[in-house]
Length: 151
Image (tube, rainbow, N blue to C red; front, side, top):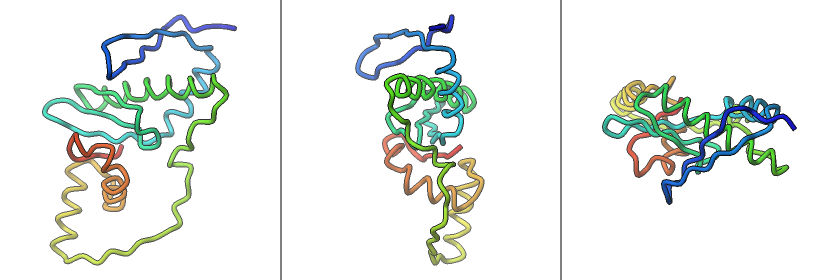
């Protein structure tokens, strides 16, 4: 079984212990292909960004910039998916694979709509729907960290 020459670090919140392990290169490539289809919820606290995976809330990382945070979160997500695949488990489906065919109508005042649209834009959302979906579904992911952003 061919192994990658690089190690993948896994950080533990409960201790500063670091575990390094090698994955089969083919498995790691497959895990990365799956990982890049997941949604990452970004939260900014002070001058640091925290990223959590929408479909796998326990998978998270941080970074000084949004790009660094996303890259580090995808790296740890790749490790998590590779571990699941290695154990013969199926990772959760990326939300991008799910068809959105249900609609909810919400009546707002013009001022409420403008306020929510501005909040969505200021947090980097593509639109009002993405912002409201992330706030409602991802709110528990970033509730202790501040306002979530969906990337």
